[in-house]
Image (cartoon, rainbow, N blue to C red; front, side, top):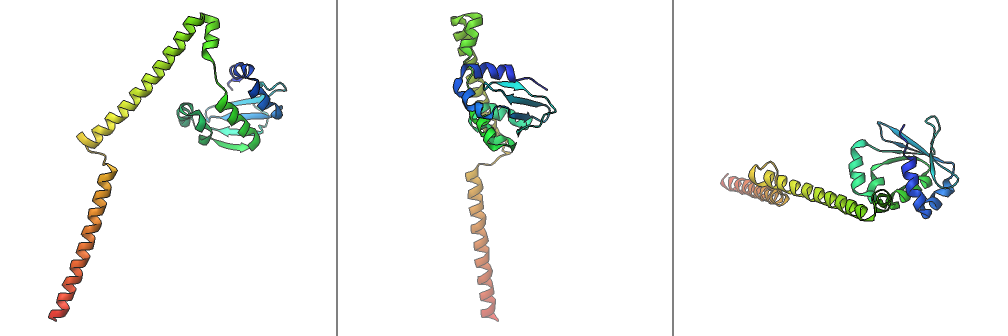
Length: 190
């Protein structure tokens, strides 16, 4: 079992509103089940978290697929839409709210270790790297889509599919009209 309490408590210690939000749930246990591991945390009387024993029954279990973790990290506001919740819904809502709104002030923590100037540069460098990685990812997706649409057409544009469908419907209607004309001519002849 992994211990996340110290890191989360570091963030909670800086945000009184978050501890106040957790206080009504003091004594309750949350289990975050990521299939390959479980994290069990108990809300303490001061609104901070402590590790709970693996044998304790959780008040809420939040099940997460490991494959959804990158999506959750990418969009924290929608993170809880990827999980399955069992148990105390009010407690789960509180966890969701706190997880969406709790922020790590990296500059503050890094400045204690490296100084203010270095901390600012480190954080801005990390943000730049993240932005560059995201832009590169977007460009790769666009280039792959263009390749599979234009150069090696394994994909078809939706407009082309719609146009083809319209053409098929028109051809079907023309064939049905032709069949009716032929039947009419045969009746007139016969």
